[in-house]
Every structure is written in C-alpha cells, then in structure tokens.
Image 1 (cartoon, rainbow, N blue to C red):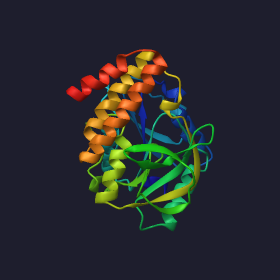
Image 2 (image 1 turned 90 degrees about the vertical axis):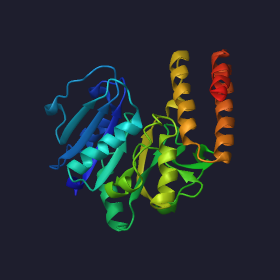
Image 3 (image 1 turned 45 degrees about the vertical axis):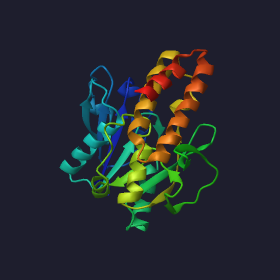
Image 4 (image 1 turned 120 degrees about the vertical axis):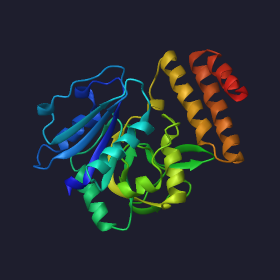
Length: 279
C-alpha cells in the first residue's frame, strides 16, 4: 500500500535535519521495510544537499526553488511528480507537522474503509489542544472547531488546512490543483472551497491526532509580520469570488491590520491595508 503514496513537504529556511515533518516520517518508517516516496520542495534561498543514507525508508526527490514561489506551486509540482511515479494518493505536508508513528496505518485503514472517498484529513491540534483542522469557516474566516466526528463529514461551513491532507491524485487533477497566484495564506481555503464545488463536498476525518504549530500563534518579529501580511493581502485578493467574499475578506484584512498595528505599535499595517484597497 505504501507504493500508492507520495508525501509532499514544503520547506522554507529550515535545515533538512531540523525539519519536524521529515524527522517524524523517518521515525514512523524505521520499523517497516516499506519505502515512501517523498518530494521536498524547498522555497529557501539556499540549495541543500540531501544525504539519502540519513533517511532510511524514504526515497527523496529534492526540488529547490530559490525564487520562493509559494506552497501552491510546491503542491502542484508534487502532483506532477506523483503522476510521473503513478501514485494514487498525495499527502500534503508543511515543515512543522509532527506525525505519529502510526500515521500511515491510520491513513490506509481509513482509505480501505471509505473506498468511495477521495479526501482524507487528520485531526490537527495546536500544542494547547485547540482544533485547527477541520476548522469552522464562516464569513471567509477560519476559527477553532469546538467538536469533531471521525468518519465522513461535510465541508459545508468547514475548511481544512493544507498539512496532513491526503488526496486522490485524480481528484487533485479534477480540482485543477492549487491556485499558484495564492502563494501562502488562503491557499488551503481556496483549494477546499473549489474542491467542495467541483469534486465533492465530503471528506473523511481520520482517527489520527497530529500536532501542528500555527505561525499566527507564534510571536513573530516586526519584519516577519510585514512579510506575512503581504502574503495575507495577496492571498485574499485572489481568493475572493463574489461580492460577499470581497466584503468579508476586506473586513478581515482590516481587523488583521489593526491587530498587528497594536501589537507592533506601528501604523505600517494600517497604511499597507489602505494602499492595498486603493490599488
């Protein structure tokens, strides 16, 4: 069954040997004789050397993108490689996801029990046990879910974050992959919204709890928040699809700008927001 999978990990300014996701994959496969194909899409400004003997159980394809094209481009390239290798399933991952040792056992079991489904997701938790995926998604804004049910669920009023998604390659293709104009923020919500319209409005919540650290929950520097806010504004521009989405996204942008302005005691984010509105 492992031959049916390919994992796609997006890396940014993180050394391979310090990548939480890659190390958890290595640990999970230590006790098996199976080999997992892995695409590492590195958006870092420097090329890294992959030492294959350091990652037993992993067959790694390393892609260096010095231009930092974003997560959407990374997952689309991962899909192309998946097709070349005749893979049935893609598991999308970022660099900060700590997968438990039984992750692939849980994925394969869920797929076998729900053979007519094409989208699977683990229960993603923050270190303080908040549910970040599946998340409630209303007014173009994601929020922590208050409850969950394993098995088949509806995407109505919900969304999923990128990391941990297990998608049938044919369904990824039917959804036309990720929108490469959305490089980071909203890439997952855009993909899932289109998926619910063009592929299916259901997904399977796998009996798998995964720890994940949201970047918005960590203390960032002024400079890093400036960069991230640019991605946030850019993502919202290409995520809007009707008047109500336009209105709610602009409102959310203003709230984010106000929050960051207070946090950093700077008018930069408010000014950036109004400059974005005018443009």
